[in-house]
Image 1 (spheres, rainbow, N blue to C red):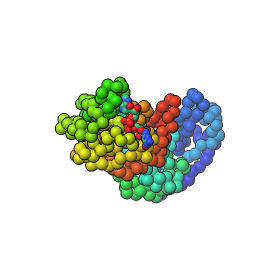
Image 2 (cartoon, rainbow, N blue to C red; image 1 turned 45 degrees about the horizontal axis):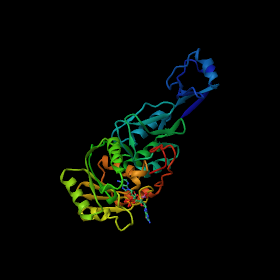
Image 3 (cartoon, helix red, strand yellow; image 1 turned 60 degrees about the horizontal axis):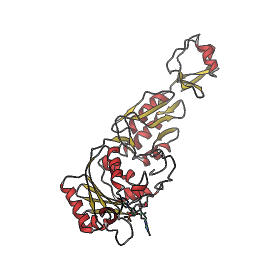
Image 4 (cartoon, rainbow, N blue to C red; image 1 turned 180 degrees about the vertical axis):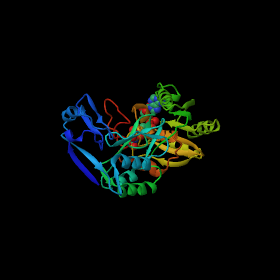
Amino acid sequence: MAVVSVRVEDAIGKVLGHDLTKIVPGEYKGPAFRKGHIIRPEDIPFLKNIGKEHIYLIDLAEGQLHENDAIRRMANAVAGDHVVLSDPAEGRINIKAGMDGLLKIEEQAVHAINLVEHAVLSTRHGNVLVKQGDLLAGVKVVPLVVEEQMVSTIEAIAAQYPPIISVKPLRQLKIGSVITGNEVYYGRIKDRFAPVFAEKAQFYNSILLGTVYCPDDRDQIKDAILTFKQQGADVIIASGGMSVDPDDVTSDAIAASGAEIVTYGTPVLPGAMFMVAYLGDTAVLGMPACGMFAKITVFDLVFPRILAGERLTRPDITNMGYGGLCLSCETCTFPNCSFGK
Ligand SMILES: Nc1nc2c(c(=O)[nH]1)N[C@H]1C(S)=C(S)[C@@H](COP(=O)(O)OP(=O)(O)OC[C@H]3O[C@@H](n4cnc5c(N)ncnc54)[C@H](O)[C@@H]3O)O[C@H]1N2
Ligand code: MOO
């Protein structure tokens, strides 16, 4: 490749080899001139004002790629379902959500690609809900010109993984809620869980089939779970009675329903006493009383994945320990924080 640096005064009539960026802090950041622009005499003062005394004219050799062609290939290699790619601008392609859904990122593949010299694949954390148009990742290369070999190495890495960046569509789920506890059932205290379930159902665009109240009685809780199963619930949530007291029988009731227990306990705080089980295809979740108190809990890490049609395994849950500690910030910014990442 010949990359020739010429004085801007000598570049009139020549073709610009890459986007030229203008930045005014707080006001503007973007391309002042795009690759392919033919330099005009009136451009000279403007170029000098953005600090350019020289510009590059590029003549690619065999086996070399301009940054824009390299990042187009890289972006296509990492893009899975329901994502859209921007055009290159300033040597970068943005990958955005093509629809609302659950963002999936193959983390190991991202690490492997970034080990390739000059590659830049910068992503968000996966397993969060995204809206159509949300930014998911940016793709760049460091130099203006790269060897084609570098890009084919990245394509080969990407081929070893499932789609690296994708968005899974969400289902609308039918939820049955079973609220347990003698103190609520016998009217000693006012129930505080039902409003939480109503809010969660609305937030996650799900349908609440109904709410059944049970005392701390294993068989009554079990029967309520089985009734919701018969009614076609996709998810059954049983609240309270999930910890260590003798009256805490909810986990026993879930087991007695015949559900297959994936985990009792999660390495997430709040949510240590949470249970994930499956009765056929119906997820049965044991929600400890922290779910009534904390705005965001392990439920908010688990539920989006169920919405996206995933059946959670024990490693899915145990992997949540790294980053599973909520800092209970005064102003909650979840999912834009370390919780669940
Ligand atoms: N010694 C230990 N104590 C606790 C442990 C532990 O491991 N060892 N775990 C703690 C964790 S973590 C959680 S979370 C809580 C809650 O556990 P439970 O799900 O068993 O909650 P309950 O005992 O049923 O109730 C606790 C508290 O919340 C009130 N409650 C429950 N449901 C309702 C409702 N629908 N409406 C209003 N109030 C409700 C209940 O009356 C109790 O005051 O345990 C920790 N403790
Ligand atoms: O299930 Mo409890 O969170 O750890 O509060």
